[in-house]
Length: 464
Ligand code: PXG
Image (cartoon, rainbow, N blue to C red; front, side, top):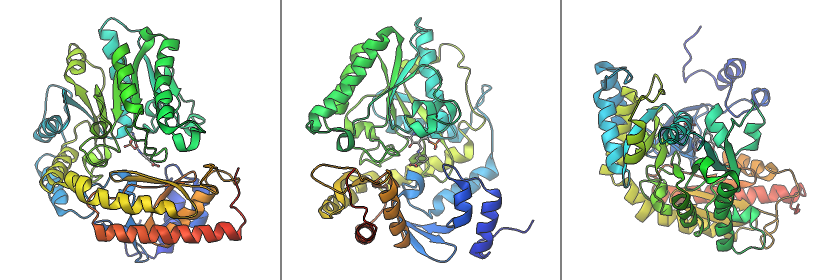
């Protein structure tokens, strides 16, 4: 086998990719025909592909490169840690410095009594931990029948059998026999698409009260926990109405339901606070973390657990863990990432500088004829594409047709902006500068204009 380098011709790399590499969430046959775009290097907010194009990455990889690409400090720490102790486990009454230091740092950053960390290799693994932890918690408290976890339709909590079951993506449930038993889904607070004529605040309240109705229907003595993303990410950056979260917190308190905040995207500065829970004003018992914890430089995730839950779980052996729980290299990289986020006040940059600047420019996109709403929290933004702003109509074409056209224009204009159905989403590195935001917005607007012209040409501007 030849050494595969960045200097091979793109077509050869694409052929090898098509022949041997199965991409996640991809129709691989179709991609093989088209050829994948090959990313060879990156610095700051900019990717370079194998043809030398420079692309503004307004998705921070997959919502994770919070600190931006190309930070040597993280590479140096990884190399040092690999030389000193590349691996050791934490299963059999042993520990190591990176896991200890990282757990302590996370406990310091996390709000309230969230002082304990159970490490995993990813967000999916962490949510699998959470399923077992909350059920075991109630079993230890003498209520083993409290095993149902309530989640939401169109939520994303990962792709393993457990976390995919927690998620509310019907396309995922259709493959592989999901969901596992005792997972229940209620509606999402997606006012734009599902709110109809109801005022937004009333809709938010009604969605939250679906939790109470579900608890009463299933039985308070059967429900273990409620899990949700503070702001839904993969579902389309859906910003909940202001009335939603206070009501959810009230209901969890009233019925003694554990609240799990999935902070995999929202955590580590993305919403303008260290955690999305602080932005929406909730007090979770458990937080799921991954992605921004290491800015994606190393795979690591985990569950941040309250004093009370940790004490109950710690009263006996919890028969759960992963070979790479607290992996020393990933933990050392994460710790260095957190040091930089803190010392360079990256969260402050989101809250006071880049966030307000992007918000103003992003919301101004709502004047575009294709854009129905433009929403943003910190560095998570979405726009709804629509043929009719007044009625908030969907397109007559299959969902995602228009979003895909827009995404292709973005790609052609060297901007990574994703589509979820006919919603366009961004989640740029938190370190993005105001000049780079100008470039982002200029390319987004140009792509919207080009998309609009294509829709006119193809006669696709019709309401469903
Ligand atoms: N929770 C949330 C809120 C996530 O966004 C996970 C859990 C799972 O994390 P891992 O590390 O196991 O992937 C995620 C992941 C997309 C997309 O298309 C989003 C994610 C993953 C893959 C694709 O937006 N989020």
